Image 1 (cartoon, rainbow, N blue to C red):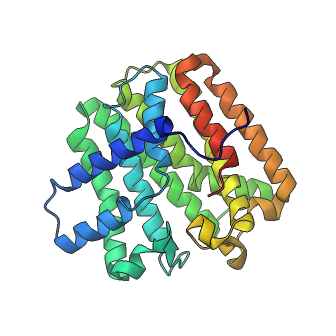
Image 2: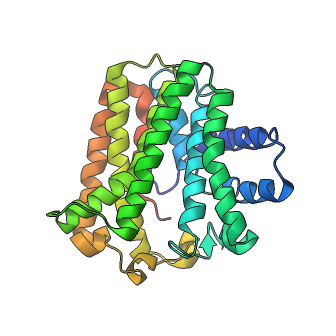
Image 3: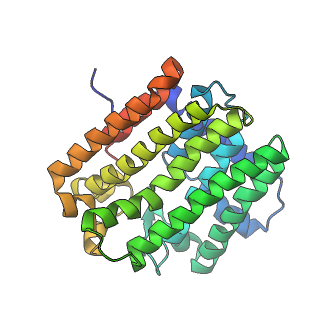
Length: 298
């Protein structure tokens, strides 16, 4: 059976659980009403929820509890939401459409978008401290998510402001951008889910398999994103299409061409599936998610 460009309800079920978890946590904070509204607009306003879905399925794939992994799923989604809010600002990508509706700075103003993004960044780690089952697990989750966030920001700097070491080819620069900008947080999602779900008891062999899987799908996700930017419409994507070309950014279709980009997707999908083999049937949902990511259309 060929891979589907949609995920089954069974695979996406963690999204609703993490959404409810984040909404409950926000309700405990007593934030200013306008800040709370802006955060909820950015955080609870739809989207694929890929990172928390990966976190919970990673937990299950190594024999862990998806309930214990909710804090990891919520934390990485807060970081993802923060990154989108700030990426959309006029100083960076200057986007006015996200998930089929106005971006946060268009809906709530630029000042509030900056502050709500800042709050999402700090709330991620506040939630880990409040909700993790032990200080040890809180420390490990903080390390995973913080290092992924720092790498994500470094990737955004490479993408928008440069700063590369000399002597890198365009393909090497592109891989450096996207293993950081996109791949690092996907890696953190899978690793944090496995750690939280087992309360730190995940074996090194299983965590290594999860890590190799995450690194493969993280880069694959961005190559597919680059392809969608040139192949799909704004209406279909729910965000502005062809924006990378308009901004003069390096993308995989520009550097490798369409066909070589598709070949790279296929190779990375194979790497992801092979990485899961030691985990056995429990990792089948992760394999299905990887197959979906390779053929998704938005």
